[in-house]
Amino acid sequence: MRKKLFAVLKLLLPFIAIAISFLLYYLVPDNGKQKKTEHPYYLYFLIALGIVILLEILIGLFVPNIRKRILHKAPFLTGVIVSLALLNYVTTKTTILPTLYFPSLDRILGLLVESRVFLIKNVGDSLKLLATGFAWGAAVGFLTGLALGYFKVVGYWLNPITKIIGPIPTTAWIPLALSVFPTTHAANVFLIAFAVWFPVTLMTSSGIQSISNVNFEVSRTLGASTLYQIVHVAIPAAMPSIFLGVFYGTVSSFATLMAVEMNGNSSGIGWYISWQKSVMLYDGVYSGLIIIALICSLSLTLLFKVRDRVLTWQKGVIKW
Amino acid sequence: MVGEITIKDVHKKFPNTDPSKEDIVALNGFSLDIKPGSFVSLIGPSGCGKSTLLRIIGGLDKATSGELFIDGKEIRKPGSDRGFAFQGSNLFPWLTVEKNIAFGLKARHIYKEQKASVQEFIKLVGLEGFEKSFPHQLSGGMQQRASLARALVGHPSVLLLDEPLGALDAFTRMNLQDEIIDIWKKHNMTMVMVTHDVDEAIYMSDQVVVMSARPSKVEAIIDIDLPRPRARAQDTFQEYRSKILNVLNLGGKVDEVEYYL
Image (cartoon, rainbow over all chains, first blue to last red; front, side, top):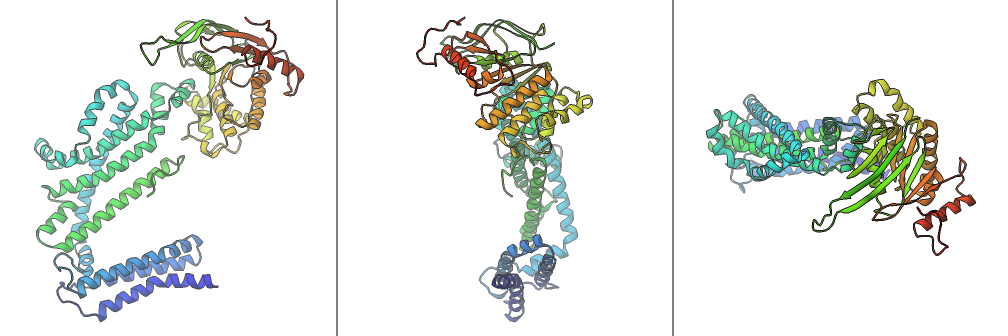
């Protein structure tokens, strides 16, 4: 009985927090410095969030898994709502923070909604660049790593080169790449590919080298040819390590994407941020950051989903 | 009947890790004839070269000099006539039991024709219902069974066993000894097993080859003339036991034995 009451209270918390947010929004006078938006986007967001939570609770009445999840998440969501309320209070009701650098939530969210077409186009450009560079880097990195790890001769000649060129920070290549490649786009693709290439190469080759020799001996006694051994022993056995390399590569590809887009590009979400900053529109900067956070986090989630599929035989190495 | 192994004056030297020192002699003129369909154990202290010999028969290592034949054919590399069961199970952790067992057939591109033998061997080693399990989901004994099935699925005439049961507890071990004997009888194959365990060697073998530590040589070849199925708690068992231990100088003080070679 008591436990049930406690659970109900827990589920009420987010709604209480939303109600308080509304009260703060309307009852406390504004500082008058923030530009007014057409709609109260912040409140729309809270309403949307409230509806989602309500739906989850309703579904949770029938589905035990969802019930468990929403009970677990309710305090956290309350924390999020309270933090947003505090942030909104500080930026719109007080003058503690400079208005220029700290736009109201209404403005940031409003920008995301009102400039969505332009933003989506830029997100598309960024994703295309990221995907092209990533694909090249991962493919070439995988093949180099395989050759380095499996064939001792290749390792002998190429390992020193990889070890010297690989650790150079990608951003250090930007000036050279921009002058050597015929187009900026080609230079950008190269730079992102390079950022992915090194960790993938390194982790593929070290993954293969750390395979216990007995795996290869077993496969030899079972009649496997060299090619069969590479495809069916070396690669699957090194897969956990390869995924780690792809993970590091993905993270560094985000950094490189931003670096190249902010340097001499004219589209993409990184360019958008630096452009908005240069015209002193910080609500645009924040919207850009929110979008980047979403893209990076979703990409990694996707990567780990793929890993869980491929590596069902192995239980999680990195938690995400 | 196939599965005859002829070993003629095999030497094996390994370069010393310290190059200024002499090479390590693992086998110094080893000769042995293994009759088709027999069960032979190689026993001896660590470093006596028994595993090296098995690996050379398996084609994993090359002899420095000497000749090896299987059914009159010279051994140069691993072949489908020999199965190899390694120490520990060494299943591929990324493959299910079924796919582990099918690995050899697929690698030799005969999976389509011999698909049925995968199921046959899964059944033979009692792993029905675990086809889709991954190795880490199995007990040590089950892993070893799967590993045996994997070595056997191509119907080799010789099975080489390198301390296959070393990592198992005593009861699982005894069960698996019986199962290996059953398979050996059913399939009329030659089995050559390296072991540390004197009782295991006596219980399972037709012939026990006792080897000494470096410089390694054959100290004695002891025929085990016990009827099968054998009982572990037999008086004659004890006799063989003391014979072998004496050859290995582990039997304590007794009269000089007369079967030194």
